[in-house]
Image 1 (spheres, rainbow, N blue to C red):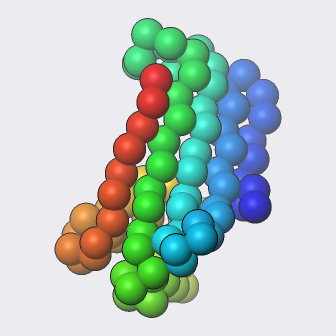
Image 2: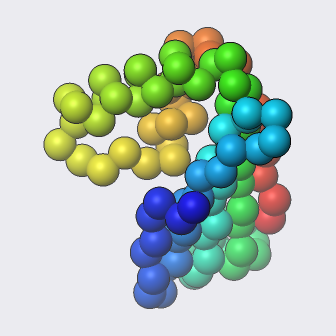
Length: 95
C-alpha cells in the first residue's frame, strides 16, 4: 500500500506491505536530479524489513515520535528509530 507520494522534479514513493511470514516491509523509491547527483543514477530504491516479533516495539516508538513531532515522519525517521532502539531489522538498497 502506498502511504506517501511526491511527484515532480524530485519523485518519492513510500510503500508498506506485510510479507507472508508477518515481516513488515517499508520500501521507498526516489528519482530525480538530486538522486542522480548523489548516486550517479537517477533511480534509488530502498527497503526496511522488520520481523513480526519486532513490529510492536517499532510501532510504539513510531507513535511516540509522530505524537511529539510537528513534521511528517520520514523513511529516515523509521530507520533511525530501529537503529537507536536496537530493534531487529534489515536495511537494503539498490541504485
